Amino acid sequence: MQHITIEPKLIAKVEDVTPTVLAAMAKTTNPRLKAVMDRLIHHLHQFTIETRPTEEEFEYGLRWIAALGHHTHETNNEVVLAADVLGASTLIDLINNDGMQGETMSALLGPFYRGHAPDCANGDCIARSETPGPALFFKGRVIGLDGAPVAGAKLDIWQASPVGLYENQDADQDDFNLRGVFHTDEAGSFHFTSVKPAGYPVPTDGPVGVLLHAQHRHPMRPAHIHFIVSAPGHKTLITQIFSDTPQALATDVVFGAKVQIVGDFVEHTEPHAEYPGAQLPFYSCEYTFRLLEGEPTYPVPPISGTKA
Ligand code: BEZ
Ligand code: FE
Image 1 (spheres, protein in one colour):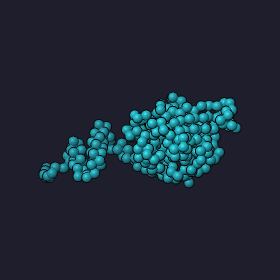
Image 2: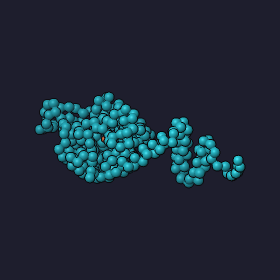
Image 3: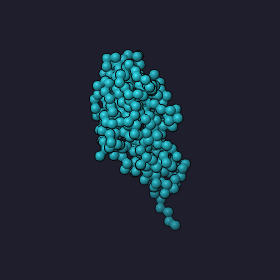
Image 4: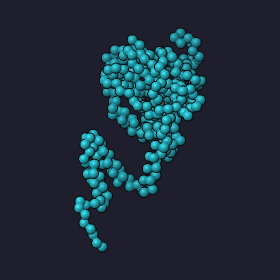
């Protein structure tokens, strides 16, 4: 058999692939892109060598990734959901928001944040259409690390209906049901009325559901309310306030619950002077959000629209 000599040498064996690919990317001028891609290729290739996928498994994996895109549209972001159920989003969250200075712990944005929620006055109810569940009276404060109130802070708030769906997933809910934007007063306080949140399943009709099923994992998130708290001169806080059993918190399908952001949801079975006329039983919750100083940023909504 005749051997043709080619210089530089072509890939001939497994060990040749990683250095050849790294060399091909070596001229990347953006240093961060270069560093991230170098490490990605290193770990991706090591993972592949270690797990030795068959060609059928590789094709299945690629189809699974393509399906993430096919299930991403105006009302669902399967790519975000996949990052969440794999624990990647929580890792990114903790790397960037470690809570070490006493600020309120952050939590995942999730795939259901919509921009442009209606502006509300303090005390408004965010249940805009028939929504089951006991009433919730939520009182919050926004302060800095020094304890000083943050006046004029913006709170972008959203939650799922106790039927287990966000309004954008549910034709029976009005547009922007259980979503609203509030602002703090001079004392750094805000308050709103809603329904007590309930746990709900993440969507399981796409590739993420297939994975959860294969892993014998339940799809449930513990009950929570989402908050984006932003104010000039402060780092934006994206978080969730939880209300659920220890078991539900510990088995959150997206690993989002943290002890510091479990709220004290008080059940009221008797009339209370502060909440005249409230139907029994109802709940109240008070929570103080502590912001770090910094530059405010704002997340890009992972979904744009509402149900068709
Ligand atoms: C949410 O809380 O809205 C959420 C977060 C991660 C995945 C799915 C839903
Ligand atoms: Fe949620």
